[in-house]
Image 1 (cartoon, one colour):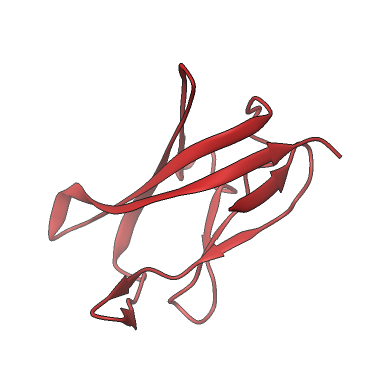
Image 2 (image 1 turned 90 degrees about the vertical axis):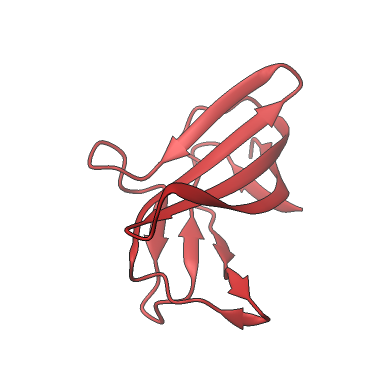
Length: 104
């Protein structure tokens, strides 16, 4: 389980893999993280109005996620990552993981 703290810059780094190899993230045009928690739903997207949620790291294969400034309720969220690119305009779902939002 990943942990993020409200109002903080804690990072979660992910590598997306296909056939056990980390994929290049350079061609990704949009990242989306759908978050659900007992009746609540929130979607974090990288866009011009919110560019700090997702950052591709210099290696081109690591996605950094920072949620501490997203005004999420405390508790454990189920997170589903979706990526979009020119070849996959409807998006690719990369599965789910848990993120706990805490206050510090």
